[in-house]
Image (cartoon, rainbow, N blue to C red; front, top):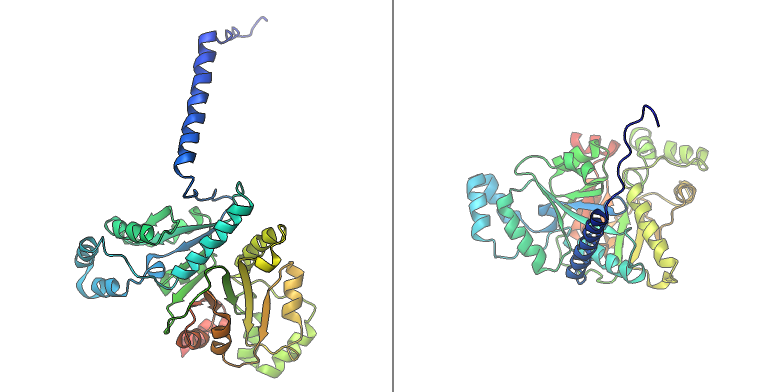
Length: 357
């Protein structure tokens, strides 16, 4: 055709052959890689995974190492870590949670071998690369499947949370957790239990507070500022109005999605995930707003406990969760004393009262 450039010549037989060979090479390389990791499943695609980022001080007990860092400085800290790189770190507060998450993954892979919707554990730490050898050695010692690391060499890792598509961030540093919450990421500060407790090896057990954790702090603000009677009146008037979502609603939603995968395979009685709502609310006086809110979200909680202001610690001893989320430190401390691993969610009006106290 006039005015058009010359047509590209058809590919030669030799060119087509080279292209086919390249495709065969890629397929062979993929098959070889897949065979190498068949006994240790690869992490899921981050676009489909539920990504839980844990800090090194949450995953492992680094109390002594942190003391050296604070009292003797960075160089002594790094020297100590290098000298002890073959000494396995002891479990930290997030350790048994991570083990439980990985058990859920193993069950999901049995039922859905090609599905990418499962947990992906990322080590998110401000530690230096020199500490990485000890962390990797300890992770391998315990047989944990943690393949994605982010080690920022003393800088805050919070900016990387969105890059890693993080659904939940757990750390021992309350300032970093607060920074993550302000960035809009579900986060909590983990606290080690004061007693040794046996945790389930076959079922992930997660307990949530309600107000300012699963739900907004709207109702808690009224309690703090106007008292219980006004709160009861408010809940009665708004019984059919769903509460706004709180910072951990998304994680409960993620757990619910995975539960439904097990239900679809008739695994209701053998589901490796169980959720609990442990709230200081009363049931009758504050009406059914909490339950109606969950229903409006299309979410279910396996067990719901209304305590009407009673201590949560004894109930949590019975539940034995791998993690209990609450926004109030006195509930966290009460849970700790009786052997529950608790995670403080720095969100809502309770933080103002905690700081002023």
